[in-house]
Image (tube, rainbow, N blue to C red; front, side):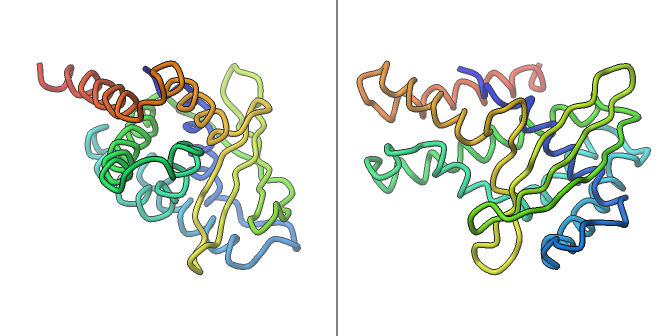
Length: 208
């Protein structure tokens, strides 16, 4: 089983990578979101543009992702109605696996993008969150438009979703996970086993 929307997630992460280099944001942008973009984005840009090895870039990016992306909230949303049906132990195990899968999806692509730039459009409210429009400019490829959603639960801004190609990252993943569990008789452990196999498969090349 694959993390099917990893490409959309990576594109959204690249929006954050490049956003820190932009000095002008719409006047209606929330101050907290603006500061978050500038701080998080500038740190990520510095890592991506550094001359260190890819493995070192991954090591440096990891704590930033864990701090500024609300992985637990995304994970709970992706599990949908099965979150409440899961036992506390299943919930804990699932979130641990989800963290690893999501981080792998981002860090694996750090070396694949070069010479990219971004433009930031309108920053508007989406319920209680801020929706930020962005366009990724890639050499010899069409521009890619997206929106990434910044939430403020707990008092600090964090990324809670990325919308690209007309679809939401977390909604697409929830549909994928729910479908997989349903095909396995509603067994949440089946999803946990699939995520474990995905992580083991990811780690296998590094171990050889």
